[in-house]
Image (tube, rainbow, N blue to C red; front, side):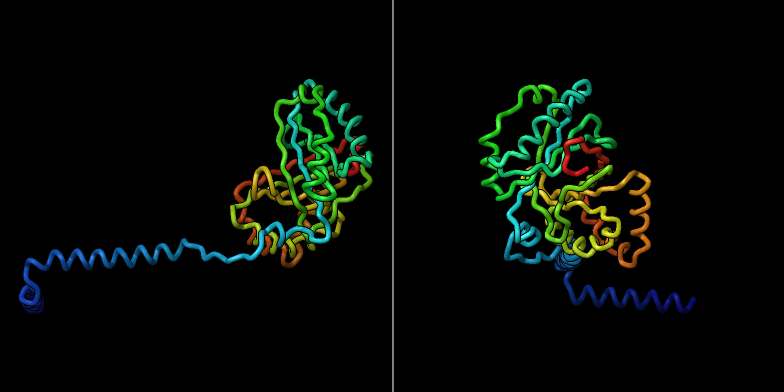
Length: 279
């Protein structure tokens, strides 16, 4: 009881001292200033958690990540075909595409042509290489005429212009039979350099079975897109090779750091057409 009385008297004495030290007219302003100051410090602290420091670059990521010894440009085409027209579409492709590939007047090479097996159905995927970059692409486009019969078979189509990562394998013809997986990643803007740094180390974990075909990143079309192309004998071989990577020291860490860079990802399992250089 005595302790409570002493505490009450102490509080009253402190309150009186505060009132004498600061007139009543100043108290609201004092409380407002204190509240505003605290809020300002809290806002500053919170912003420091979310604002990312920019690492200044002296060059475009296309120059930092692409192969410098070549000036190759790649075009990736996705054609969604009317289901009833897929067989006729494939027949036209197997007649026309090899002629362009073999014609010396066209500075381009057909890397591969496929139908999607698992993923978007009734879809054709074509990958072209243009030796000489954008001038070669322009030259080919000026010489080619649109195949109206093939165009009438399509529901929709899109393409992307790509460069190849410097640390990835050069896509070269291979014998089959193989299935191909195209893994496409939509990265968060501003993270391409980080992705390249991690995968420059990660690719060595995926070379044992000769499954790595090519790695590319977009320049025109849907930006901050990465495409990794893999070849496997069959779906079970794919499963075995991918599971084996998790038993290699360092793979788990690289996956841990690259996953946060991804906004979306997609996998297509594709079957090559008979005339595809990649079999």
